Length: 317
Image 1: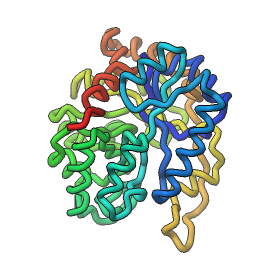
Image 2 (image 1 turned 135 degrees about the vertical axis):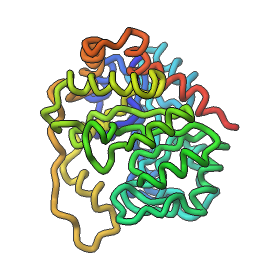
Image 3 (image 1 turned 30 degrees about the vertical axis):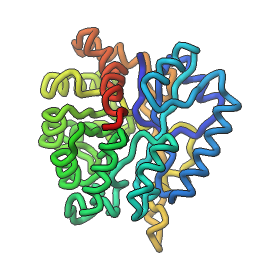
C-alpha cells in the first residue's frame, strides 16, 4: 500500500494516470491555502468535475473503507485537506460544515499568525489561542485530523499537549538533519511519538539536506535514523509534491492576500531526480531497504502507518 499524505498537484488526467502507474492507494490533496470558505467550496466543485471526467482513475474518499473500495476498483483514493484555517473564519460551526463537505485534514496555521495560533515564520509565537482550543476540541469530536506542518513550535507543542486525540505533521523532516523553519525540533518529534502522532517525511527540496541535490540514500538514512529514535509506527510519506504548478502559485502561497508589497519573487525548486512524480513513489522502497530497514518498517512508512492512523483518526468521538 502506497500513501502520500500531502500533495498540491495541478490536477490533470496525466497526473492521475501517473498515480495509477505508481500504484498510489491514497493521496491527501490540498484544497485550501489562502481561500476563504467560498473559495474552498469552489475548489471542491472543480474537483467534482475531475471525479466525473477521470472516474476510471480516481475516487473521492473520506474513510479508510472508501480508500479500500477505491483500490479494489483500480483507482487512487483522493482525500481533501486545508493547509490554512482561513475557511473557518471566526465561526466554530464551520468546522463541522467543512467536515460534512469531506475535509479530513486542517492545519492550525500556514506560516503566519491565524485566529488559531502562530505560524513558523512569525517573529513571536504566542501559542494556541483561545479560539484555537475550541477548534481543536471540535476537530477532535468530528474526526478531522489536526495537521501542524506550518505551525510555530510553541503553537505545535500546545496542540500536542492539549488535543485528546493524536495529531500529525503531514510533511516535514527533523531539523537536526536539515535546519529549516518548517522542519521539526526533537522535543516536538518526541511529543508526537509519546502521544501516538504521525509525521510524513517531506520530499520538498527546501526540507531536504542538500536541497534538490539530496540523494535517495541520504533521505533514506535519515528515515532509518528517525525510526530508530522514535519508533517504526510514527512515520509515513508526505511528499509535498507540487507537480505542474506554475511559479505564480508558489508566490501566491508565500504572499497570500495579506502583503501590500509582495516578497521578492521565487520559483519552485527542482525535484530530486529520484522523486519527480507519483511514478517514482514505489522506488522509495529501494532506498529504505538499502538503509537497513526491514520489510515491515518499509511497508509502514510507504502507507501502512497512515492507514492504521487514519482508521482511528477519522472516526468521530
